Length: 188
Image 1 (cartoon, rainbow, N blue to C red):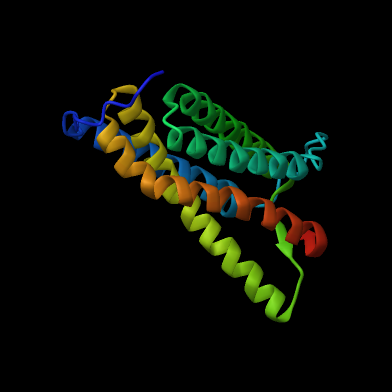
Image 2: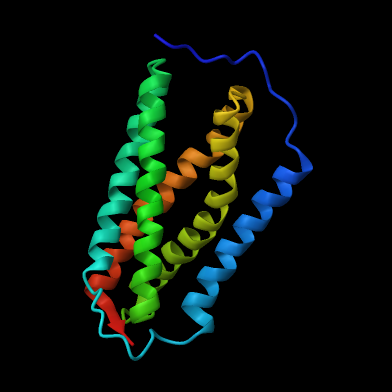
């Protein structure tokens, strides 16, 4: 059985890694912001119908949540080999989600929420915290993966203490947002 080497903190993050991580995170946020708000709705001339993608993306988010919990349980049972498989799978599923999200929104634009009253307030609270959380997940995930790859497990663990619950929240609220929009969404 593998055990984690938690005695070494590893080298400090290089300046180039910090700039790379910040640049990548900023590029992702700016691209998604442009996709949703800067270019208008959909392509307008596309015959591609991706209306099935929100359901697929909700399933991917739900799968990511289950895999995250599996990874957490594996590391709690001192099974880093199993943990690694869960976390690589979670990252792959989340990357597939991102591809599906970009594809759907590039063709169909965004969906407006049509609910009212307290339901509307709840939806926007969930949506805003989901967006802020998903923005934070990107640099944290890049850092966690880098530290794990470099076997700097003390630093990896420090990052994942924040990343894991945040990523789980983003995954679960992504599913919730799907159901809110499925029930009360208005396609533009």
